[in-house]
Amino acid sequence: MISPKIIKRQYDSGFEADILLRKQFNQRFFGIIVDFGSSDPQEIAGSAHFLEHKLFAKKDGDISHKFEELGADVNAFTSFNETMFYCSGIEHNQKLIELLFRIVGEPYFTKENVAKEAPIIQQELAMYQDDPNWAINNTIMKEMFATSNLGLDVAGTKKSIDAVTAEKLLQVYKENYLPTKMHFIACGDFSDYQVKTIFSLVNKLQKKYFSTNKKAKFDHTEVIGQMKDVALSSQSNSNLFGVGIYLKNFKKVLSSLDLAQTLLEIMLESKLSVISPWFERMKKENLLSNPLQISVNYTRQGSFVTIFGVSEQSRRVIDAIKEELKELVPNRERNFSEDFFELQKKEWLAQNVRSLNNLSYLAVETAEESLDNEDSFANLRKLQTMSFDQYLEHCETLMKDSQICSARLKGKDEK
Picture (cartoon, rainbow, N blue to C red):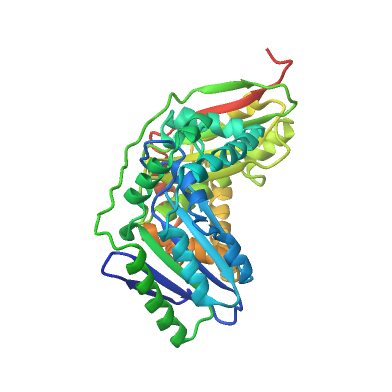
């Protein structure tokens, strides 16, 4: 598979820019990703997310309205180690880029607008907390990472949201929104002239907004929780449960964290997906009927797996998952595991091909990879040439010394 052409620039300030060329697309995507997220060091939990919200506020009003006037979409998100602001449209390339830089580079925090935002974020948090899925996920994260920023919701807590002030928000901004921690991405069908114009404009704007020479600081401290199995009281009839796996030995595979993540996801799917022998046994015993949701995550503050599902006998399913993960590939299932690995190689190839036609997804993925010095297309080539025994060896290393915790909703009639 031919990977898309990416043209790169790095400016004297440390600010970086990529233009990803996708011919015959009318849509253009622009984004700025910042190497700072909810689990990174911040005096008040949730500051990164609060900051994402308030950077849309300007002296002349909500800047998102200016994108709407141009017929463009604009949005942002905060994850564990990054924050991204992005927009997409068909026309007005220069204006969209200028507005995007204004979002990120022109903070306008006042006592009034910060106080007005706090209840909005608290309401957003409260809405999530009403969802049983949130309770399960929140409990698992706390069991794995205690009350560190990684163990808390991205938005923080009601108490921490109340503690945010304009002064503290500006301090977080100045410490983390640095040119060495920022990356611009453009994706679409651009001519050679447009490529030169975009790079020239980005250089002008990054000089205007990010002139500091301050160096970025990174914190890799890991805080480990109690790793217990928790039963949560519930007045609902929900049978949700979750399993958390703390990956003590998660490391790069062939110089790539993304590839390590992919290999573990394949391994866990091979053992627990709907087509696995294990799931077939669970189905015959009337313990599971719906697929599990499996996710592998790595952050600077710790790496982990989450597994979510629904069962009327969740305690038995959790025990069965723990038992299944004790052994990577039982001899009786080796043929299945090897066939599944080859099948997943083809599926990951197809997934990468599909991503080329989803401009927004492709651009966001490329921006995220830029922060971690990753290359999904290079990783795909490494995956395609990897043998089954090599794959097993990597998975065994990644799972070494891992610890498991769980959370389940205990029905109102359960003792």
